[in-house]
Length: 570
Image (cartoon, rainbow, N blue to C red):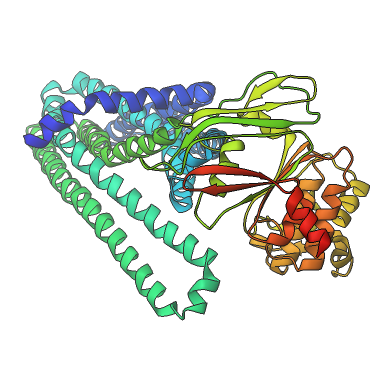
């Protein structure tokens, strides 16, 4: 009773999930309705076949067979087979399109939301929601819900047909329905909580596999093969526990309902046999009794067994809705002219937790300046870059871009259109080198790709690869050295020809000669972009106009003329 009350209290959320499902289903409603019509037609044909079989049996016991009834029965069989085949094919097509439709919308939501908000979720968990949960929702809308409606129609048609022939037997056949409905309703909340646990354990399971494979080098370096295998088994056991617990509830309830309906069927059989012994009914009537009683009980039992699937759909809808509630990035409709871009940062405060990483900092960078951002590890250099790139929300203060014409625009997702960015680490995709470089500007020509690689000191080694620009690399640039991968990433930024360039430890894996070649290339660009270089290397300062040092959550800005003079004298 306690669970029943809790389920009623949660009805507001359940109805919210249902409304979300209906809203997502709107583009597919015509096709889903067509599938529903085919399903209902199959049910009606089944009832019609029961009536025809009665006529055939009655005519046979009278010494003859109505050929017309046999002919209709054959037509009904072929019609049922044809409709079932059509339903199956259409269902596959609609299900695939609907599944992709949900995945596409959720995927777009993820890539258009603030990076920091999305990073709260593990990649494995996001993949589970995009695959398993989206599949559950699509299967529910395309297959399960229409099937439930078809079962309800079949139940009503069968009941009234049986009631026409024998009212008492129809009522007797339906007596278990209210009991089953109450059982299903009470089990609903319990099954939903178990389904959520199953999906969460599946996310943890997938997340660990994805993460351990992505960091396979670390696993092997520390000889942790046995540990990760044991951890995988542990996560599998956790998942198995919740799967087993959920299915134990399903099997127990299904067994109880099956037993109830079998008792009902036996009762109908005994009642029919008793009527037949008294010559109150014909053999054909006995046949239709048994057929229709079974066709009443099967939909009710099937409806009960669909309760876990409905619960699964609602649980998956809840998990997808959670992603849909992430705030989208702000993107202004009008942008400043992308020419000679500088930036003003004023009163900027930000922290990943309640403790600030940057506290009320201000700095201005003029168009065309090359500025080094330095400071010890973990002090906030990359955080400052992420804020400039507008990757995060909940920022206090102002970050404003300005151009040579005096136009100004606050940092938003749209301002990335005039920024070229080389993040830390290996950020290459699997595919050809050409495809990786062209991601910086999708309409880049072959000559522009070559020029960008030369500027990044990467063209020579690319030419020496087996297939040159068409050489295929694996995930995270597998097949290239760290230095080679870094040069491809720098070329990807150069090809953008953006007026604002950000290099976040982008030359850390390069030797000194190659690094200097890249920095000279930046200096010789025309028009020269504004460039921010996050670095730990003092050698980089020789190519910079200014140095920004982050200390104690503040920015210390200094000119490098004195440093250049000392370097020249040395």
